[in-house]
Image 1 (cartoon, helix red, strand yellow):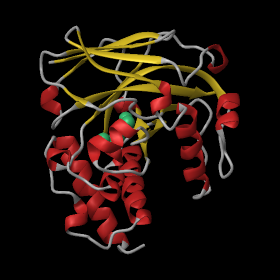
Image 2 (cartoon, protein in one colour):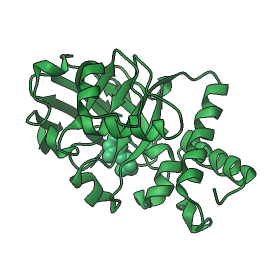
Image 3 (cartoon, protein in one colour):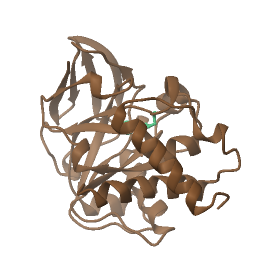
Length: 262
Ligand code: OOG
Ligand code: MG
């Protein structure tokens, strides 16, 4: 750790205030170039602690920057992990008020729901599939608190990996009923196809992202709890949205899920 506890608490407060007030900020490594990975995750943990102390519930976790299209788009080439609280979750077909956000983008994702906890180190694709109750389509709404989505890996980790809102829906299927690698993903904005991909875009198999998450948590003596929803990371580049937009995500065999922006 390069930062002291007060600096970490101050940065967490700053980033969370930006989130709650829909204001952007410069990336925090500009002012704290010595910041390391442990600091970045400690800031994220402190943001979670703040939310839990105000009554939020931890409902899931996310992996991000797990596909080449996403890594290339953001200029960051390491997967990152974040948390999902109840307030981020919106119902199928929900309307999201753009004014409450800074510069939202949407990404098509494969979501996992676990029936058993997963603990690293040594977690692998087989363990993930065995512990998965079902998979389903999800749209993640990301909203980096950093100006123009300009960040590096540590800054984005501190900012809870741009987590903002998400919806899961469609048809839930057991992981042995679908081939998650060849699963086709089609995202439409206002009826036009804006991104296309297949599950394999995420680290060769989206379950690998979940295994990496379990191994990441395992290094800190933590696990992915049973019942968690896990977003495995954008399959394609994220797409900017504005008031009036309608987003529909169709995933092969898993039906579709949609969101509106107003
Ligand atoms: C970071 C979050 C990335 C994903 O699915 O790749 C992410 C960002 O791009 O702002 O959630
Ligand atoms: Mg994402």
